[in-house]
Image (cartoon, rainbow, N blue to C red; front, side, top):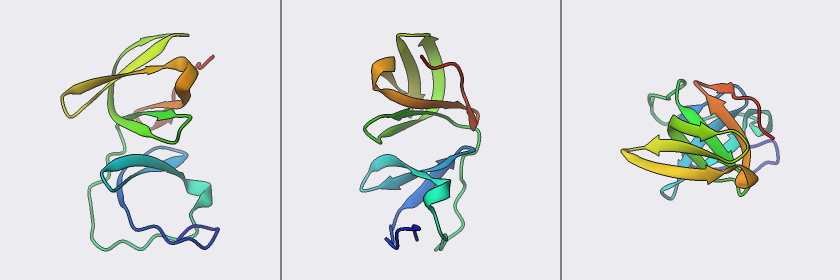
Length: 105
């Protein structure tokens, strides 16, 4: 349950120091931990706490392994054997092994 009172039915697939990465309707999104009032787990799932994440300004998140980056230009993250490029202009935050990755321009 969120602090706003909304209840969101989703699967937590990863987390970092500031947020949960959730899967809902096949899409990965981020929910900030400070917005969560309580969690109700239906089953114990393995949450990847070491995954890297690229959080886009749109709210979409890529969770996997950072394989390349060009500071000031782009990040490349690999998920399920596929590589995705996120241009810095579209990125809100980057996490490496669950910790905030700096610097972002």
